[in-house]
Amino acid sequence: MEQQVDILLIEDNPEEAELAIRSMKKSKVANTMVHIDDGAEALDYIFARGKYTGNKAGHPRMILLDLNLPKVGGLEILKEVKGDERTKIIPVVVLTSSQEQRDVIESYKLGVNSYIVKPVNFESFSKAIVELNMYWLVLNQPPLLR
Image (tube, rainbow, N blue to C red; front, top):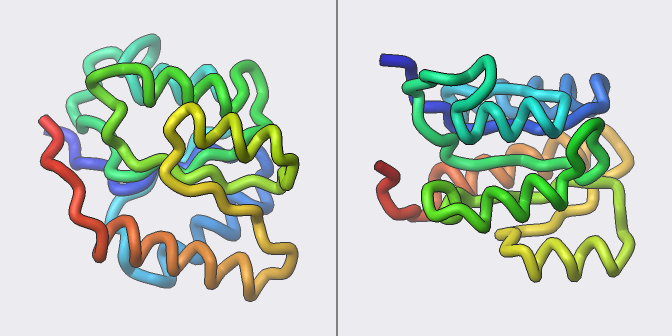
């Protein structure tokens, strides 16, 4: 059986993804992480379809989601994840550069657990990633997923 994934990082900017990955590894909170840079592929991964058909790892414990993605945008991913009985209890944290109120409002209407605007500098971004991991993977008590 494949190992349960702690974090699914859905981010298309390679520099920001690398920074998030390094920060997560440095924090030593998350054991396993998958990075996907395309919205359509992310949905395939989450719902075990396409090239991920038969994925036995189960759902991630947390999804870090950018809104501006190729093929399928973050709001559509959020809508599908929170609209499906199998995945709606997975914590989804939007981590985006968008400060647009319509994005914030729509994200919360769709069921996002947290909306965070990416800090501009390296130190603040790294600290935000570590704190996210600590809260959602250590302090937060989620229901058991089957």
